[in-house]
Length: 89
Image (tube, rainbow, N blue to C red; front, side):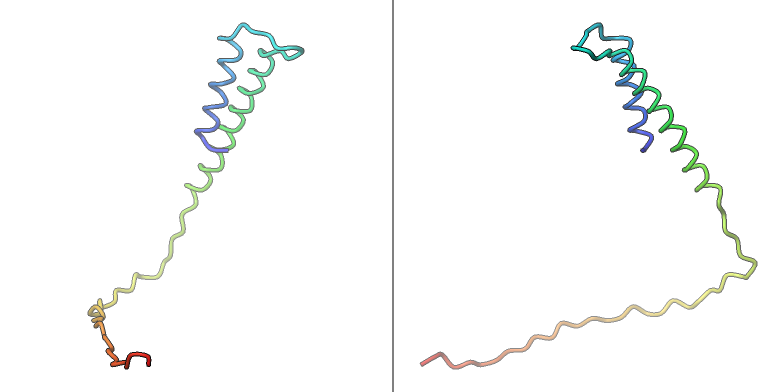
């Protein structure tokens, strides 16, 4: 789950919990809102942990960087082939 999805879940959960005062048959929208907000927060925490771990890994080498001479670009030529074909009889 990405950061955007997590923030979306938190926003929808907050709307269901705090802004709506409706009831559906047998479904408590306040509880659904709290569940969505909890899932959004959990997704946000997990996403930041995963992205944070990726950014910390740095690979260094002790070998010097080798510089190479840049070669001249390859020249491309278009070749056209023409054939004289007799019309069908």
